Length: 205
Image (cartoon, rainbow, N blue to C red):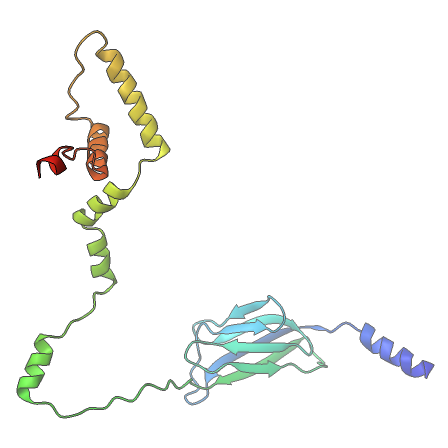
């Protein structure tokens, strides 16, 4: 019994040998190399990708599991031997094309008039560029600008401008604020809050 335990402990104490894995990943049907396929050592954060011709090279250990994946292909799993005589190991991995099942499309007859009506009333959704142009239109930007409060930097500049204007016009009439953007911002804000409504409107009606 003691001898069996010593043998088991000796086997567990042996570290797995590091090997250099070199190979190529190809399509199972055509034999063409698959570029930029992912090669990952399962259970670790180590991995690599194949080159333009499907070749790869990665450092691993005996009895490791390699996972191969690529868009449009079914993943493949390769188990390395538990005992290798050499520190270099070569392999060829074949990946099957992943078949995509599309929904069934039923084609039925249609009259010439019906086709013309359907074609003229067809509403095509906006693409990303058209949506971006609509969001960047001047009207949309003005609406966003009116509803966006001023930040700390803008408020600070507004206060400094008001103090400078008060010092400039000290002892005299204040200068007009037609060219002051902060005054216009406060004016539009007051309109939005309804401060310029007629207080006697309800009485007259």
